Picture 1 (tube, rainbow, N blue to C red):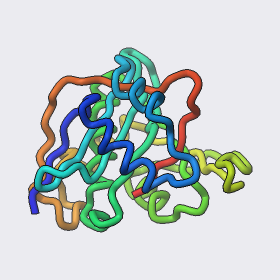
Picture 2: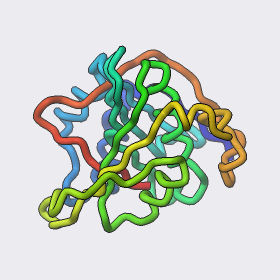
Picture 3: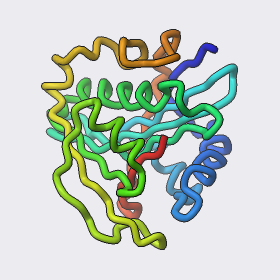
Length: 194
């Protein structure tokens, strides 16, 4: 099945919020916060569609010219998991961070989400430390991870949407529709679920 990644817009907000609430049932962002993320010029939010249906989204905070960037969120619908879409979205975010001049990318992942942590490690992220009881109300630690983007850019990852590491998404296309996004000051960065 064919899938495509494009820039998310405010028109995607309803579908993104439905996926947000399903993926993060105890700590979903508010619609107001997500709208601000999608509309901000300091990052980029992506939508992944399969057969015209939004099945994933991801966000990056990377002000132009900043030395580092933050993966804000990645979510893939439960029915679409296992197709390499989380990796596709992550690679697209990393490519965007590099294009904005970032040298490092940081993220936080729930300690009880080994699938996401393994994905990040497979792309070169390393654990820096933990934030105890960071995710509330679940009382789950955040694992803080870092990627040297310069090393990633010179690794065997040739393309954010197509590559040897994708299992079933060789036909994923990355397109640029030019909408931009970022994190608002009153919402904390958070981990990504696949």
